[in-house]
Image (tube, rainbow, N blue to C red):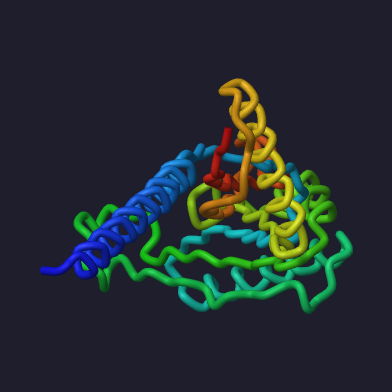
Length: 239
């Protein structure tokens, strides 16, 4: 190999070394940058509000018993009419009142034991349901139910099928503000964490919006609802 070839090979080797060193430097910087982006903090933001129910479903149920089927139906019709008149007198429109077909049980046909000792062969129940957005009127009318008792109507107790439902149906109206509030709350928590750890809060890496929940505020005020949502957000941290 002549001197010219040796010099060319030496120069090429030096250039390769310089290139490899530069590449290593760039790779090193990239690794440091990647490690920096891996620093994150995950926080939860809460938004909670109390709202009034905007819809009521009010079932009014009574039971009847007898041995004459025709008389039983006549009694049910009479009491249904009395309850409907009471509701209209309380200010509910007829369109908000629905009368369901009565349920009749023939104990003898059903093979109940001890039928010879039964006082009444037939038992029946009837339900009138009020569906309305006038929740305050429902609550007021419920306080006046004693008037039906004076008419000889024994209303069913507080069973599962006779419970009044109070609903809040305007969730979409308050959703945007609650999501914004939950996000702001999460950012405040993350900012404090970053400050305490002598870091700076970066952009959002990941955000998960939790499910909205609507529950009674307590068992005594089912017409007041508590709406709640929790957002989980992950932020980048930097020095």
